[in-house]
Length: 175
Ligand SMILES: CC(C)(COP(=O)(O)OP(=O)(O)OC[C@H]1O[C@@H](n2cnc3c(N)ncnc32)[C@H](O)[C@@H]1OP(=O)(O)O)[C@@H](O)C(=O)NCCC(=O)NCCS
Picture 1: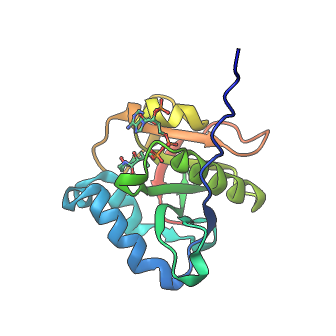
Picture 2: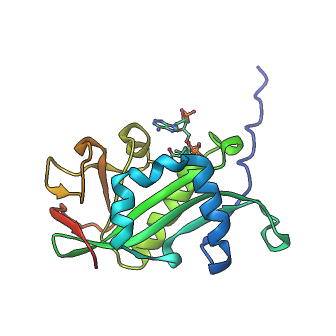
């Protein structure tokens, strides 16, 4: 039997979002979500949340220093849930032609690692459980995490970052 060598993992560079990356990230997010994104409850959160560029991740082709191409992004924001500081993740997107290569999973993993290393306790997001359950997120129980607008509560997902992180409960509000 011939054993085929497994394909090498596609190479990318993950780094925190820099001020000059903002317009490229915004353009990627616009392409991925379209104008409908502004109606989402996550946008209501981002209206009062504090952006955390140091924990927001950008995925680049390896030639980033020579103006490489942005492949994906995962932004992070500071909020409170029931008075407790928590990270809120999103928008999260990978460029259309680059999907299904594991870049999204690597972006989430790196953003969560960075937040854990910074001592943050939880990452909260609104998204598809079938995707995010693969990267460590579970439903935030029942109505315990209250978003600032209508939402399908099954899409409110959380990942604990520390061994004793515990459950989140309460309204999502500004830091
Ligand atoms: C969601 C997104 C960022 C994933 O990026 P990616 O680089 O393709 O992710 P990965 O390569 O890590 O994972 C791909 C796998 O997830 C699956 N997947 C992608 N989106 C999914 C979803 N919404 N629900 C369930 N599974 C999903 C793919 O089918 C693929 O499955 P496979 O590994 O069994 O083939 C990308 O599809 C995207 O930008 N989508 C549009 C924007 C969006 O919906 N963002 C999330 C908002 S909550």
